[in-house]
Length: 65
Image (cartoon, rainbow, N blue to C red; front, side):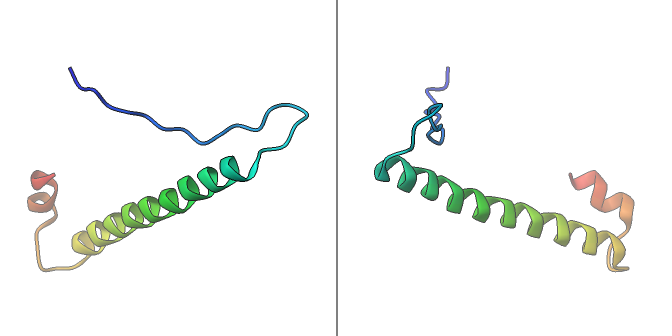
């Protein structure tokens, strides 16, 4: 069994504001999320360009994934 630790951003309570620590935690999560999403977009872009280029056969590329 995997002992994974899941961390979530702080949710703003209804009718109240977040304190500075909670805002900084959310900011850290946000910046990390942007880096991950940009990395995934780069992988998609690389994969699409690899299929469009004539260097490899499309079926051969798709078999490797």
